[in-house]
Image: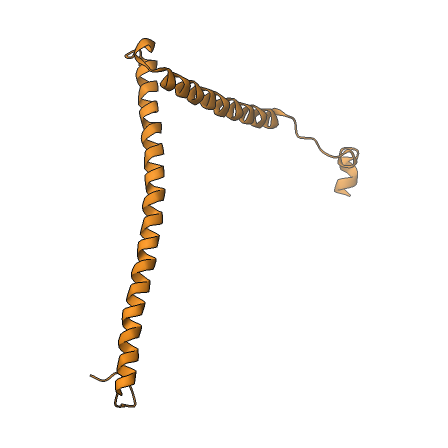
Length: 127
């Protein structure tokens, strides 16, 4: 089936041009696709490694908190990382506690109204 409205006879030069364009575009597409996949895999590798390490430390922390793992069986590097993890957790909790405390204080404060509204008598409002 011919998709064009006006049919024309393809010359040898137009055929060569069409073939070269197809070949070159395929190579460029492949190169671009390879570049994109390389970038994605690199980023995925970094994220996965970080998540694996973080998950491993969380498991260590959980075992240590339960008392199933003694401190003498944990390496010094892992102890340092666990200490950092505990410090980050404490910092997050203190920030959250302060935020909640301020929220409760705001809820418990009596509503303040401007002085001009306080001084108006009910008679003036009703009139």
